[in-house]
Amino acid sequence: MSDTNAPEQTSPEGPKAVTQAVKLDKIIMLINPMSGGVGNRAADDARAILDEYDVEADVRVLEGEGFARTIDDAIAERPDALLVLAGDGTARSVATLAGQKDILVATLPGGTMNMLPKALYGTGDWKKALRRTLEEGEPRKVAGGALGDEHFYCAAIMGAPALWAPAREAIRSGKIGKAISQARLAFRRAFSGRIRFDLGKGVEEKAEALVLITPLISKAFDENDPGLEAAIMKTSDTGQALRLAANAVFTDWRNDAAVETHRTRKVRIWGRSRIPAVIDGETVPVGKEGEVRFVEHAFTALALSAEALEDAD
Image 1 (cartoon, rainbow, N blue to C red):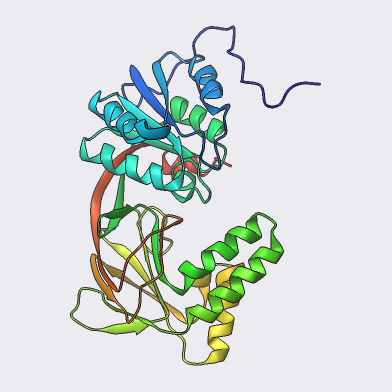
Image 2 (image 1 turned 135 degrees about the horizontal axis):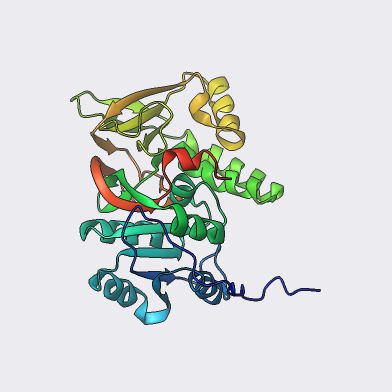
């Protein structure tokens, strides 16, 4: 019986060619083995895969007190591409830092929700994403948003759905009991107060939730549209609230009739109490008020083209 946890073996057939869409003479891959979707063998497996290709690659483990320094050193070396296999928060941070230095970055799926990796590589399997990146990757400009100092590249959820996100994750993991518990907690808190916002028009509005969706994953706007899709959740009675709660936990709540969408480049939000918020799958502190702005070119990803993504799993 084979050991499914053993590191992958290098192919004896010589190095495979890498993508010709961009120069890839030297790459650095950062790995956080403590992230939920990674594991202790990830660094060895990554080295084995990279050894199959005609590229100079350096794999570095993110750990302990040197975690942030390792990232800073990798960016300072300015490799042709910086690959990161870590949690959702670390992936966002590395993408932001690399974007500031105009370094190509590949955020492989190593987190819990993997919103950004799945949008760029079409899979939650980091090994498959790594191979496809090396073989088919090309530069892809990624727009995003910034909620204060926190950048996001898929969506920022503020209000009720941010409380429902843990319930949906529990369902995906098959933990139905936990999902029910989380849903009950979320519903008790979700409709106790609304958030207030201004979509840059000087008009105050209020709703149960506001979700700002980037062009990368928006179904309403094109990827090249200069702005964020603002999906607004409004309810007028308890019946609508119950329906929205069910849709938020079990399906895509944006399809609900009580949701409307607009385009915006700047949003101000505030509330009577701290606003629940999730950006790219990670809970972040907001406080009682905040501001979101559209970032037209946040970073350049080494990713699959939109056409290649159609064939990805």
